[in-house]
Image (cartoon, rainbow, N blue to C red; front, side, top):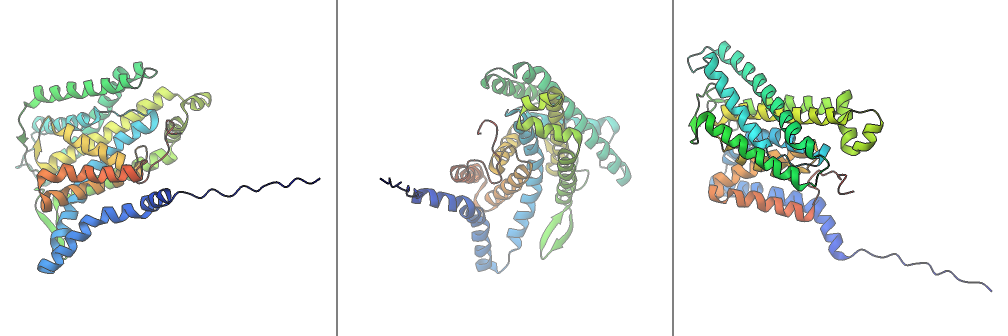
Length: 354
């Protein structure tokens, strides 16, 4: 007597899942392009030129480059210990303060010659990176390392506490009011134009410093021995320990790199905005964290992509819609991306997510 085995019918996917998957792949691209395409068509209909849109995007790229450097610090730390370092924005602020303080110490003013300004800025960049890197390591050793096995809420609250401490350091240092700084590089001077789109000195500085730093960081993490240790620790800290990797040293190095990038961003922002304020770290840190989440937190390329996208969205909203709507527009984009692609544009699966 033969027994027939029934072949199970394949279970089809729900139409909502199919739509969600298609939108996560292709729809988000359309959403990201919707605003610039609409504004471009509007410009063509109005004056037959895309010059205004081009100028908006150039400024967006410059701001985005600064956000990208800060976002890399967030994504480095989260990728290795799954902690949101909310004091990172204030580390960026301290970088601006250190660079500005050095200018006064060495007498770097508008009357300084071109060679003196160039050398002074290089020294300022290196000092800001070193001070912020060491500061970030100190924060990790004092505030996060003792809480490594504690509930995740404990280091989060500690990070917020350190953020307020550094803000008060900024108030004691330069006061609570925004201050202007010397425009040492004449950041608004037009170097050249491409089809009517102006390229300023500040734009060139932001991009020229950011691109080498991003490439150096990528090469370090991908090729160096310590970079491989960082990737191993990010994947599985316990297995990394069994392989002889000093996890504590690796985590400290991650904070050092993140702090150095924040210090570099602090100097660039100082030269680009020609102003300094103790609260600048909170604002820039929030936007950079949003960029890291949008691109896919834990992913270096995602942090850079998110920074550039938010920089462009922010500039378009400021110039075309109104500054009062900028935050709403930026977070509307973030919500759309999170709903349809929770891991971000170029997200990675974390240990916590599986």
